[in-house]
Image (cartoon, rainbow over all chains, first blue to last red; front, side, top):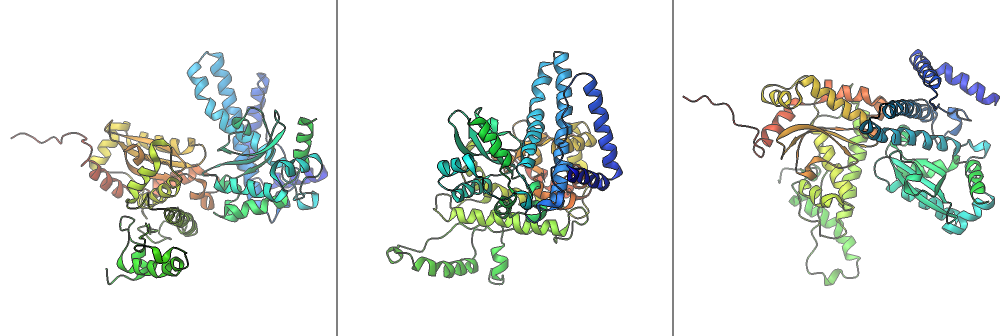
Length: 241
Length: 265
């Protein structure tokens, strides 16, 4: 936890005054909304430094991805929810429906990225090690082998056109593992109500462009070195009890 | 044709499917590969392959600095668009069903009325990027003039209103896609349109006038996540109103935008 404190102090120091002002604005807006009883979401802290995932994912990308992209999803999600509450209060059905795409996009972005940060860990903290235990056996059972699974994820991720995510999901009804892709920021549940996300890999260009340019397959090959299976194993064991 | 080197003839416009030089070299490259195939000697005649080329932007890659850097153009044109062209050619090699189209026609055919064929993504992205480079110029921005400005004011109220609408569309497009100023054929008016991924307005038979690439790769190296700054740079410094004017003049041959007011003697 001390590491996290150092990390957040370091990240705060890196913030320009503009971002500090933005953060102040976000907290006052959140405080205002909270005083009306509205739930607000906030950017989760990363349990590791921005540079901890080098050389698989560069510090520059991690910082922008977390502080700019994820933050803007959180901010816009809160804004959309506030507007939704107002629209519901004044019985404005068209406005309610119009807000759905913004909620899906920004809310999905917040959900997906929150899972993504938990799926990553520095190599010295276990990143890159394939899963052991029941999840490891399930991967072998449902995909044939670890290599076949990784290859399937990478193939689906590379073939995805535009922006989206590639997922290892658990179908909790059939207790089977599946590889799925979703477009833009659609959460995995949009592909099936029974699907629980275990591992998600962001294949939006912002996730790799500064380091890998248009070599998406290289990014997909390298990110496995920092994919961590603790969170995925916990979720799997909970659902498959 | 004889005076062209192989290199420039292979960079010929997409409508020029092959030149003699190109064809000879393609033929010699393919011949050894073809000869190794088991049915080579039973072939009736050598197969002619569809071939689209990578078209250069109408300016040097550093000409759009500082609004679009040379480094970004080298990646965007030299790697992304080149990848789309090579991918398209590879897909078309598989059989000759899609042989013989101009790039425009190929885009519409592979769109297949909403259920796109696998070749659509590459074909449309080649088309889109060609159109995009041509929509920009060094020293662009500013305002349109004369008839084009009148048409914009007629359909949007004012030029400022159009600009706001265009920028708002670019900022509210979720994911990857393109923003267009389009002349709608049936409605006979200008509109701002957003499309996802590789889709473009010619598949609906409308006439695009401006395109803006809002895939992240189009601005990330220069502007990181600040799409707003990129769009403003495009509107204020890059968009070529000369090209847009030429495009709408051509469009008026197909869409009647009203009789000119000729005074009766």
